[in-house]
Length: 505
Image (tube, rainbow, N blue to C red; front, side, top):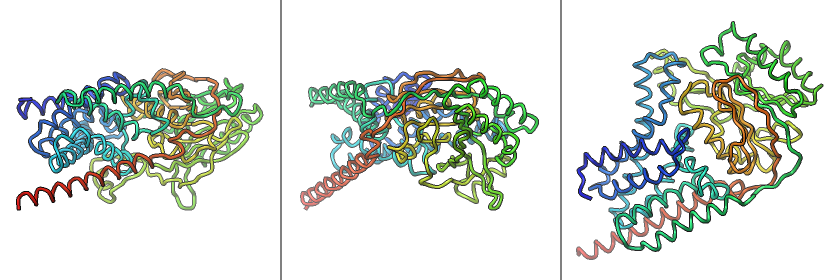
């Protein structure tokens, strides 16, 4: 396809913008395939790995530059930075994560040039998912936003999620886009490619109707409390009493529920400041009404002076869960002392928490143990499947007020839905300003509250037992698969190098 490098660069950037529309709140899932096919064609027609990487970098700038504009909202409106600094940091954020599509393109085209360019569309799915895993799980505690599988929660590919999780399902989506790209490039294997794509879609749709987990008890009546406290008002001392009374009143109206859940740090104070006068009397009232109350509050150890972001159960049982997977640059500062020095220089003050540790005992409410995640933790499947099969349902508490009326609350709910689908468990998700929601064991939203409304949401959820295939094996299969393919590519490269050397001699 005779297009100039400049035209391909522009097309790549626009394709990145297009991919954003496949995710929440837009949810045009089919655009993901169109966007990816466009990107892969730009790699095929690249003259070098560097040229492909440049096009992919622009693609990443379009994706992250538009898709995570909520970073600016958080830094400028709630982080205390100036407008210029906020813009700069948001651009740097997008520019950094755009490096990962660029790295993917470079490796794909390099491997294709070293082996056989006709293998390019078969190499793409393996390298793409390997880089997604690096970005989403390892680097800087992981940033799994815009992993491709999240865009397909309402399509046929959702059927594969309980089997293969985010990365395995993502592999199949990238494979589909690669096969479409191959069809556009050459007429070879046209029937085979069409058969593979059709088989994936038919199988995925059929799998959506499989019930991987089983009902283990009567429905639990749960109420979510969405306090709707603006982030710029939340921690002002003058608003503490008003906030506590508001949550107390909304809770009193639902003592007929089995479980009542408050959002992340619903109580804008440390535990020791409100325990005797507020929480202990509230706990006694909850117990008298045979209701389990789940609240979230910061806890400071008076001896070590370390702080924890926690969930606390009151009523029939008083137990803590301490957040373990912390948000970098939000709850702790990586790359110290450099990051602390830079943030001090530009006048941004962030929280400082320590992780609660692995293997914490599960909390109980409504007669069943549940898997707890606080805010960002619901973006990591391993944090949830480690609690199975004991956990009968999932509870997520979060505070997306940091991001205002942006894409983030919708994207975050989309990510949370994936955890329900992977595990075959119902999810109760309480947020400060939205989106509070109930999600069924198939990842479908069954009820949600409107954004920025003081609201309570009540629904019966069903306790589930058993394990989905993914909950049993995690990412082991896809990682083993990627490793074997990588070894295979090395073998192909080795023998091709020997053949070329022999031919020249």
